[in-house]
Amino acid sequence: MKNLILTLIMAIMLAGCGNQEKTIWLETDDVYIQLDPNGLTLNLEDLMYQDNDLTFEGDGFELGIAGATSGGNSLTTHISSYRTLHSLTNASSAVDTDLAAASGYNTAVPSGAVDLLGVYGRGADTRANILSLCVHAETAADGDTLTQKLYGVNEGGAPQLLASIVWTIGTARADGSTATHLWADDAVITDTHITVPREADGDGSNRVCSVTLDVQGYRYVYGLFTAQTGDPTVTTCLYRVY
Image (cartoon, rainbow, N blue to C red):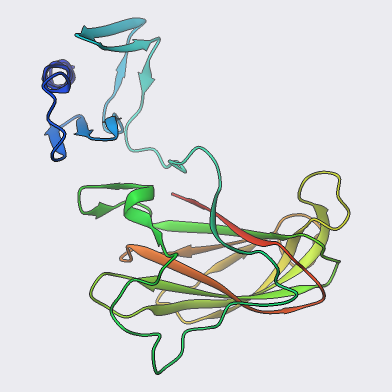
């Protein structure tokens, strides 16, 4: 608890000093605080603490923890909702071009790749170790398919194929009403990764199929829809991390 109080006091003092030129890290064994141009970030994941009402105030700054309870080292999704990994505006007329041997494997990070360090990271430590995916499509029908390629990327290295996935659209409605806006309910995975991706609730369940894969060691994930059957238009892959 003493470490938390001292670190918070230091953060409040620095918050008013107008230093916006670089990120400032304040760290103890129990807690770290990040001050950067985007604001204040607190991580209490290693803290075991409970109090009814705790408030710190400074010049133009207030932090309150009311009835706060924090337990250490639990597994969470970290992000508050699913996010878009990649999408197509009209898969029926044009799909993504897969990486070409002659030009696609240079050491530049592909445009549109998701930066997992920005999603869930600390300093140079990427904490987004597991990626869970699901897919939905508009103007789709039961049995339509979408072929997805997933690549892991690090700065200074070439993209590496993690998996090829053929998603099959089911009948579960993604917006709860539109008969042609549907979730994928099956996934056939061709694995090219060191750990095997896993499918959950597939086999044509007419619910929502998901694919989970280990992305530990990669900073970026890059997805492409390279083929389709049927007539889907707006096609979206969602992800969460933990």
